[in-house]
Amino acid sequence: MKTIALSLVLMAFSTAFAAPPKKLSSSDLQKIVDARRAALPAVDRAKTARCQPMLDAYNKDPEHGDEQLVDAARCFSDAGAVAAAISSWQVVVKYMPSKPAAKEATRALGDLYERAADFPRAAEWDENYWAHYPSEPDAKQVLTRAACIRFQLGDNEHATRDVKSLRGDAATLCDAIRPIEMPKRAP
Image 1 (cartoon, rainbow, N blue to C red):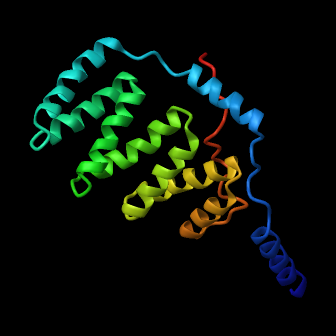
Image 2 (tube, helix red, strand yellow):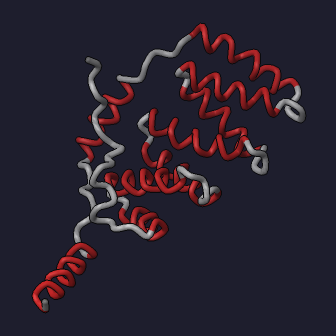
Image 3 (cartoon, rainbow, N blue to C red):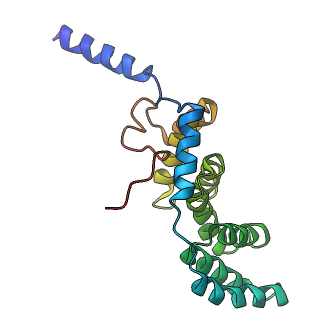
């Protein structure tokens, strides 16, 4: 019985001090970034043509065009126009922080930056989502992605802070999640 208890204590102790996920080398990271950006689907120009009038409507009357801006951001994202979607969602966050669309924008920005292989910004927006909307059903999952991105980038200080917020274990948190990886090849 004492042996089992001692084994459990040693196992818990070793797990608590196990190494966090491995940092990617700068050359591996650059290869992944280049491959992810090259694998982005082409922007659907026909769809973006439908998005522009929404953005124009917002720009003509920003005081009353909140819905047009949100619709334009969604439209650009669906069309694969990542940069235009990011710009639109950032305006939503900046000028409509107390509106419900700010939550959607904050969540979308993490995904869009990750899609664009701008991993530090993706982690930052995922952390912002957790900070502002911790009770959302997907908030823990989003912060977990941020922590795993931070570990892969070698930013252990921010990653450890994220893990503490999750009350998780740095040694196992990212076992199944590696946000920064080569894109999967199409079959």
